[in-house]
Length: 397
Length: 116
Ligand SMILES: [Zn+2]
Image (cartoon, rainbow over all chains, first blue to last red; front, side, top):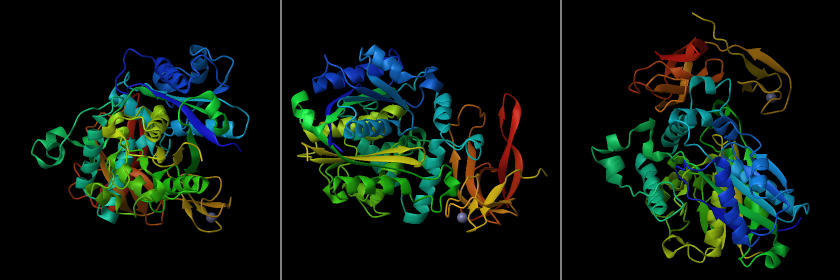
């Protein structure tokens, strides 16, 4: 197998993008990535497009075929990858395997979603279609509802507090305010969402014990990256190549009720273990992480399950500042899903774009993890029933 | 009282109880199952009060929980309560089979739990 490098990345600002179609957004992000790699006037061998909802939300299918045409990348091979909210990392995985195997040399991976053109009602229902169609979906359970159930169990088992959840929200929105690609660029205070009488109005319950500010926004957006064999990176691009040092993917029961211990996110643990093994690294070797904080609880739980902290210690670590920029392990310096936004099919790609910028040391000082050499991402599909973890490394092996 | 139309599957080899159905046992991969009907009251294992409901629900909120029947079957259902006051993990509830949502005016039946 060949080592695979990310040689170009691109993103468009997430948010509400009424003027753009789904394919517009994918095309803009892809062109940024092609130009960044220096392949803007050339082609690629294959394209993988991550998208969860085109068929439901836009009544459009075969998105990858539409994108290669739009980008004049014909006759490149093209596939759409749908794997729920983990579609992004799944598409990158497929691209990595294709290059590693020697079958393709240059691959474009683009991920995106257009969610704001339907009502919040419909968007919530769309995401809920990933729940079990017989034993979950008919009851009206949503992803926030599952996260609420999970959070209460975590509180009961580990003594997690709302104060810890609020600390994640404040940290990530503070970082989002520095990120021009973020959907939410607004600072929040503990007083405004937890302590003052106004907090009841500002931050109503969403899925008890989770509140509005525990959740990511519903976003439009897209991100893209270019892969090639590490050995070809130098001849193709001027950028510092970023090695895909390892990835892992694991699954868990579809229905939440069938997990022996629902607070144990087995797929996160297994995906991370595989990625660390492949990369020959351990959690303490990681300099920066992008975790899937669709809800604040998930950043805390994932930080424990990948091995940054012991079970039950993640919330305390946030309060102690260990996960902020300059801390022991900076998490979601981009603002995370919480502030950058969560266009579901785009998220897994966006996380790796952000890590690439971090590892190339290209971000403005206030958002750059100093001298970062290794990065880790978790892209959390379903309610933890399909999870991918990637580890990237600066400058080759 | 409507019959609770749930069928769980108990592995004949290791005894693990499945709901919903699987082709092979989650624990031991055996393909032999005995059908199992849920029995008795339920114990509440986990719950939430969920606002911002999906398309198709007119209620202001739903209280949803995962509960375990006396014979071990675990299932998700809607909890009949006006608020979370009095709802606690570990409490006993009475299960019933009632409409849990309406699709184009037609009821969809499912599990409801009533605190005792
Ligand atoms: Zn068995």
